Length: 265
View 1 (tube, one colour):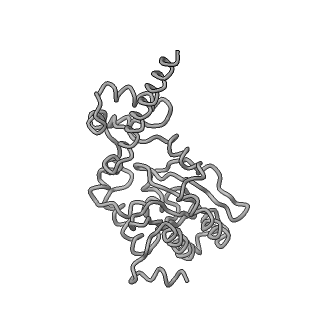
View 2 (cartoon, rainbow, N blue to C red):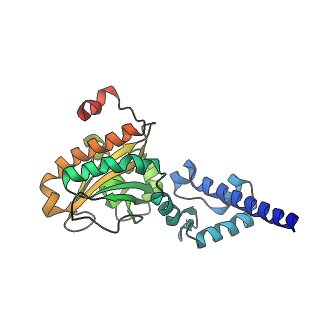
View 3 (cartoon, helix red, strand yellow):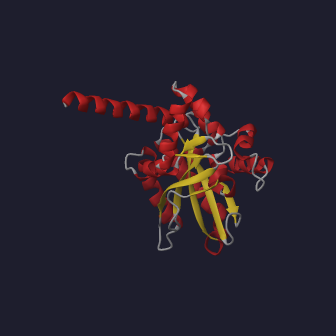
């Protein structure tokens, strides 16, 4: 009986390891750059038969751990996995950003959001309110990146070719126009939108960088135009300073020419 039990446990452990291999492949730079990977490519990366990989992906998709694009039939990491990551207190990004966001929200008296990029969408990991006007329902919700100020700063490191891969089939936002908006946000240090996502809603976002200087997240402030519209640029500059604080806590060292460190003191 013990031998059978040990054998069963080993089989489950081996199956779990193979599932983790698939998830790591879907989290790779290659998968993130192209927005997903097909069964054939995944089988090559993990060194398994296509039929085995296909069965495993279907089981993971049924649980929401991965999801399949209905057009390309390629797989990517699913919302349930991102939601679990967002809820864990062990997430360094969330731990570092949350106190800074509390200060920001109190200063602006608006709700701040911590956002990351997931394929074509912006995913909100955390929302922090500085007043009674807290915006509910954003955590775990994905919104097309081109519609939001957060998307424009999260895509700051993307090349034109990468934008075409992500958004080339979208008729709502021409890639060239999106590229121009991204470059404008980079020059300003923050992105701003006014009623582009929703009538009466405005927002600003600034990038959070890791120790390599790569954009890994964004802090966003969104509010009704009647409340924030006249101080949108002021909010943008304040949000940029907050995002820079988080970046520095993550190990980013701004170049001496940027002047960011001087503005933080």
